[in-house]
Image (cartoon, rainbow, N blue to C red; front, side):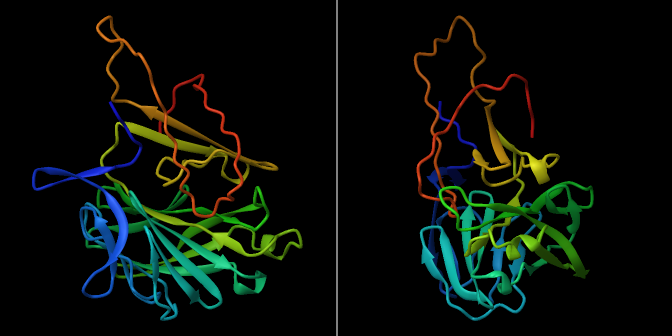
Amino acid sequence: MFLTTQPTRYLQNGVWKDLDDTLVAGADGSLAPKSAPGSTRLPSRADGVTTLDTPAGPIAIRHPGASSASAKASKASAAYAGALGRRDLLAVLTADGVEEFVTLPDAAAGASYQLEVTLPPGLSARDGESGVEFVDAAGKVVAAANDGWAADAHTPIPSLSPVEVRVAGAKGQTVTLEVALRSPEWLRDPATRFPVVIDPSITITGNPSLAQDAMVINGAYVNSNFGTYPEIWEAVDGTVRARSFVRFDGLPTPSSAYFVTSATLTLTESAVACPATPSALSVQGPATTWSE
């Protein structure tokens, strides 16, 4: 039995196919996964529109005031040099949405930027515990724009500062989101080393997986729920500590009819902004139960 915390296959016309998020250009120039359900798209230019499928219909995302920089695709990511003034933009498809990385060359480049999100009829936006939630008429969360982190260029462990995503305004079905450092003075701190990378994400809430994951972080996010965050972290950065939990709910109930002869846990490092220096990872069973 092989369980994963994110989808690896999808069903199309009665046939299971492997997901392949390698970006390929369509007839209109937009970038789409090579093999995936739905109509998720990244734009061919920084001032274009990102489209994400949700159970309630497509969500359209754009960056107001972005340049016309062309996308440079590599695997599941698209890079837009100078997309936001002097700031570069990198968009990365994930199994349940898109994560973006905005690179600041210096403190003067700005500690915030905006996103415009056009929602399908029936959805609205509200500020949540760890970002902005897109909800239906019954209050069910369909998608979320998640808070992130700003990481500086220190190695092997960068200095971190929390990034918040909040509703800044709305007109009809178009919502303006503000992505900003919680502590802008962190950018002006002489100890902060540039470039700095900001990494909020937008995730789609789908059917629960048999494999569940969550993450806890001390300090500024000690009371935040990261059950929908697209990554799980294990990190120590001075006073910042992150711990992740993974649970597999679909395993057979233990009985005399089953014998476990071996078990393997595979973890894949996939974060774009992490340093390349190897580090030790401790894996152990939690003392208590938990849920997302």
